[in-house]
Image (tube, rainbow, N blue to C red; front, side, top):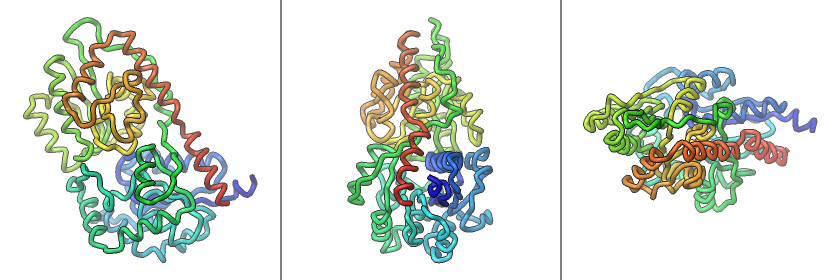
Length: 397
């Protein structure tokens, strides 16, 4: 046990810290939990912008960037590319550690070249080499450029396969991602799902149903995600516009980072006559996000082929029922009819019907959905996540 507590661990996050994402949340919680358990943990990343990525958390972690952020155009793309290319300089900094935990590429490649025991955490198989049919990168210039760089390098796929397969252990988020990872890399990963942060688990699980018998009452819908085409916020706007025909005071709040895609969402809402009912919020603290979860009545997730979805899980922890697609990682969170509803994959009419069904429930039926959502969310804990992770790194010791 003494040897384990003296273990030096480096957590390396490949995509960088520059927006509030599920992958970034996992790295933050792993670092905090392992430090609380007595491990000597440092966090490294290709690119760091703490002001735009859970600032109340990342500023405390002491994240060490491989390269300085000079706030130049394409800085994130340049730093991620340089991290993969100039790995001989980086691996010198990592050789003093006993174990590396490498989240996504190029962190997994760096772990491989450092020649130390390393765990590869795959949030999804490399998005540029194995894109989903719905993937688009034109909303983020850094992602757009990285896509071109990776695809133009002839050995990208070979090096990704080599470095991933060489990992001492591979962890993933959902059953869906584990199956996908197994098919691509020919390995058997260990499922190590994330969890809601404690601030959301301490929310009020007993919700007061919005309806009081008046058609003028105001159902409140919520979704939390960055404004990316792959998240299909446009579908949520369409569904919401139909709901507004039945409820004249319905409202929708979208919490997430604004991008070049934001303007098209606003134009769509304007054309559908619902712009005045939609609030766009970004760069908020977890405490403020908790307020939005607790004041909403229903959480919607329209992202097709979603990897997992920490935000839907956070919503469930506060007692919010979900409406999601019946395919992908997020579908694993919903027991259909018990914690929310699953719509037939990518049938927008069915998604609307499932959403409308929530608002036909009486108070007792809604309360039961809410209580079931909390119980389901409680199955996912950071203690359980880190127990799995700790077990794997202790084997490497």
